[in-house]
Length: 175
Image 1 (tube, rainbow, N blue to C red):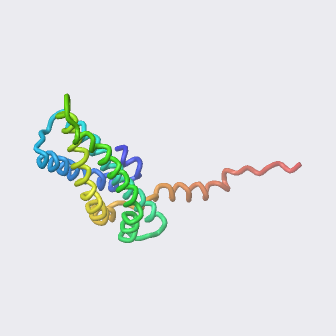
Image 2 (tube, helix red, strand yellow; image 1 turned 90 degrees about the horizontal axis):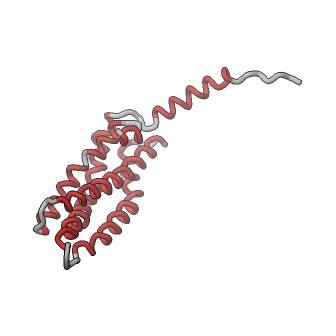
């Protein structure tokens, strides 16, 4: 509901939410490859992974919606959005992965718990970013035409305000 309110559209929110299962699958792939298990610690990493994935998807979808408000068609808007937003997405992914590396490379007391979180963050986010960069444009292209024009509510409100503005103005008394 928060995403739908932010985007003023359920369609854009659905695009973001459809990427979450792929992020979870990416995390499970990372857990399987590392030989880990799904436990409380890895579930904490899953929550963080879902948040970062959603943030990356929101960056792309929101910018594509802004480009569509400016008059671009769906194909060019999503293409330009991915091209222009790939740097922030990759910067987020790289900094988070490097931040999670010490969790994987740790030893000593409690290392197993930290490694569970680390593998979900490092491996899961690495795979999930690849899924996000390919999946968001495809889903946007398929699902965005089902929704209305981005910013339609704001444009309608502005038109109504412009037409009613002269009626609301009172003549000033001449002195």
